[in-house]
Structure formats: structure tokens, C-alpha cells
Amino acid sequence: MSVLLISPAGTGGWRSNERALAQSLDGLGVENRVRRIDLGRLERLRHPWATGSLIVAAAARRELKRELRQGNPGAVIAVNSTAAMLFPFRRLRRLGIPVAIRIDCPASEQFPGFAHALHRRLERRALRTADLALTMGPQSTQLLRPLARQTVEVPLGVAISPPAAPTDPPVLVAYAGQPEFKGLDLIVRSWIELGGRRDRATLVVTGVESGEAYAFLKRHGVAEPEGVRWAGILPRAEHDELVAGATAFVSASRLEGYGIAQIEALAAGVPLVTTPSSGVYEAQPLARELAPELCAEPAGLADAIAASLQLPPERRAEYARRAAVLLAPYAPDRVEPTLREALSALGVPGPPGA
Image 1 (cartoon, rainbow, N blue to C red):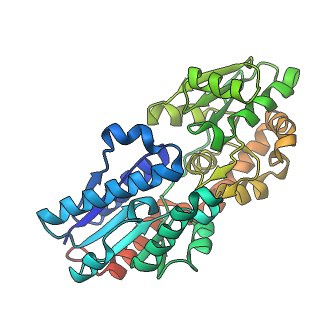
Image 2: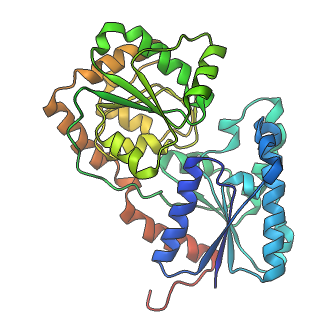
């Protein structure tokens, strides 16, 4: 019995989600295939998201129907709730095909306002109709449990790595793949405010090219900063190496659906400098418990960055040890048993001998 994954994979985080689910199913010996949605010329219409979400949902429905013409899968997993918003649930039920939705944060948290009312309504319908919601962490589960028929918490599976000594001179890393959501203007303003306190440190911003970043900053009235390197979109291994050697990871997101980059920084033992965020920001309470002085409102972000530059080696080592303990709910060894539970709920048999 095969599992079909319908995946928009529109961001780096959701591409990670898609890969992790497929690899975990492979590891369990469960046959699966991924059907990535290709919007073609409609790609440019993804934004604004109030209309882009409907375009993605319609494309996901078409892809699913094409798959059904070729044969019925044992189960379908929508790799994010947008993909499932227009699923033909009645037809799937008649065919005996259960549906799960991989979801981090409900639209009610991410997309307020009249423009997104239809998105929120369609997502609520999908969650009530689907057999299962695959949540991603404790906060995710807490928000989704009242909205879904059934939830199983299947973490992404973030491996702990031994902390590396930070580079000298210091490097701080920030991810700004969606500059508005990721608060790039807040980070750069704080970096400029830091002034001489940053000494020889460099801020490396990934996920956005320099031209796009400068245009974004100009729209927000932020001057071009000194001491910033725009790394663009990096290969995964190169990004991991950069983060591992960082003095700190800086985040000022206005909205987080989960915060994979921040969780991965903590797993590498790298101190997280952060502000509060709306949505599901799994790393925020962990960061506050680990080092409250590195957690601040946007107005205090410069001071929090300065504090990260002053952490002594013994404090960094203790931070990494405690982070590894707090990340237990997100560990790889939790993925297999929880995914088995999810597959059982969907009626997908495990491999022989499981």
C-alpha cells in the first residue's frame, strides 16, 4: 500500500518537510511517492498570498486528480494545509483513501484580516474533514488539536550536533528568506544601532540576494548597513557549516509557522538571539529558558545581540548542553514511533515484521 505526498514545497522549510516525510517513510519501508506541484506561469501569482493560496490549492487538487486516474494510493498526505484546501474529500472517502495534512500553524494564527477569510475557512473545512493532522511540535499540537479530527505529533527530527568553536572574528547569522515575515528591517536596524559594540563581528544574512535585500530595506527606510554580508540562498551543507561556526543566530520574525532554522541553530549549540513572533515559534520558549538576556522585544534587539557577543566559552558550552536536553521532543528518535502511530491511524500497514 503506497502513500502519496502532494507537495507545494514553496519555501525552504516546506521542502525540508517534504524530504523528511519521504525519507522517514522510506526508513519504515513504506512505499511512497512525492508529487511536487508545478505552477508554471502561475508561479508569479503566488503573491499576494490571499490569492496565491487558492492558486496553489487548485493546482494541488488537479495533481491529486491526475494521480487518481493512474490508480488509487493507500493514503494521501498533503504537505501543508494549503495543498488540502480544495481536495475532493467526498470522492476520496468513497474510494476509501484516508487523508492526512502535515501542518505547523493554523491560518487563523498566520493570516488574520478580511483578505484571508476564505483561506481560513477552507483550511478549517479541510482540517475537520481530513482523517488526521500531522503536527510538528508541542505548540503546533496545542493549536491544532481543537481544529482537527485527530492529531499525531510527528517532529521534523532535528539531530543534535557537537557544538563547534565560534569563528574569529565573530560571525552572526540570520535567515531572511521572506524579508517581511523574517523581520530583516528589524535585524538591520538593530545591527546599525549596535555600532561600535559589534567590534569586528560580521552579520551574514542567508536566504535573500543582496539586490532584493537592499530594495526591501529602502522601502522600509533603512540605510545600507556596514558589516553585513549577503550570502543568498546557500546549499544545505554550506548553510549548516556557516551556522555551526556562528557566535549567535539572530531572529526577529514577525511571523513563524514553526521556525526550523532557529531549532536547527539550537541543535548545533548556537545561542539564539530572538524577538517574540506570532504564529507557531517552537524555539522561542526554549531560547527564553536558555538565556533570557538574549530574548528581547524589537526595541531591545541590539542589546541582546551585544550580549551574545559577550558570552564566555563556559556559558556557551552550558547553553549547548541544556539546548540538547530541551530539544528532546524534536529529536530524530521520536520520528519513527510517531509516524508509525500516524500510519496506523490512517490504516496503512507497516512493513513485514514491523
